[in-house]
Length: 497
Image (cartoon, rainbow, N blue to C red; front, side, top):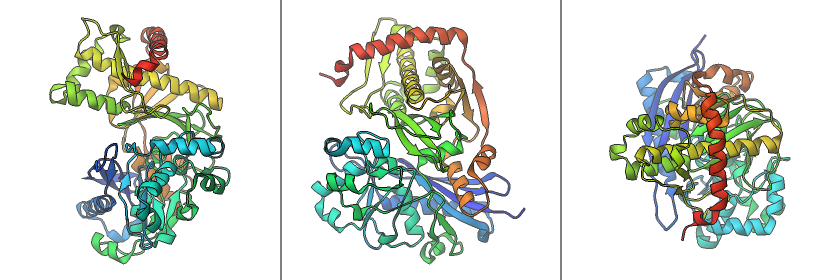
């Protein structure tokens, strides 16, 4: 079979990772990672430079092409995935006129309340998500605080659609927004897959600034001459819309059918399940996004779990030696001998005012106890998430949870999660599941794959399995109930003094 290559980039918070993938032999040929920066220009603000996103993507693609020595005419598609919860304003020539406001940016919280008061019930009913701290509120913040940029802007985009549009040489009027990310906006009507005019009108959002909603497999354009020259490859290569990093990761990990579940173990610890239907959650805990596979959805909940681990490592672990600490923590019995942690540093999706906390500190508690308590707390959060998703969608019991991301390397943690959730934990062989998902999407877009489900079943596999251990599972049942009760009894204290 003739070689057929895809260039796929994942545009993240700390950098852009790019792979060159050979569809014909189902193999990653080369991987390149290029760093980008997070900026803090104002209190509570976290931004990224769209120019750095574009240049890091181009540099990564150039490295993949040059290092692999492939025949560039065999590159059949270019595709991106990336962060979903933010926006970049572009002008009529598709040039960025604002930074990207990261999902970590909290300047927009007051406007979440504005949208919730204005039409919160309609936002929930139409788009399945409540109190969204992302695109809609961010638009209102820009309108109120940076009116010159808001008025000048032609459209808004997100990182992957910004870079894709630039590579394709699009104009601002041709901007697009792939539909796996629309659930983060608070402005979508899932039934029609279009922006909801009433929500925009009531909230004061200029609907003309919203781009066309497209499916992930849409070919939005072809590589233009400017970037073809810079990359050293032919013009005319299809540029595919792609998906958000989380939904792309779902299909890259093989979470494809109702009842299957996944765990993205990163800075944000995200638990999700696949479903053929969606229901709005009035409590606001369970959120819903489209899967890249038509007719399926991902219900999900998340917390800043990996961020709590990073906070602990940066401040309390000499030289960030978590590996040795993991060995020590593994010898501590379930429940960390009475020490409980609550992983709410930076707040939660339901209550940004919360903070993290330890409860029950005793003289015998060590650094290893403190570390294990953090790991247990994130698994406890997952247990509550799994219950909420199961009840909301009436899904079958999760027989397997597929885990990927940096935290999946910690086999002790995988075992702990298997015990607490009482199910098999399956660690994926290739951890860059978002990039694999993007490859699958591009392969379908150019006709190489007939279906994405069939492709996803062959592109990745399970590398390691953790089965629940009966004694630990039984012990954790009572520990979890105590942890949950402590949270309820001390909830107000989590807001701080």
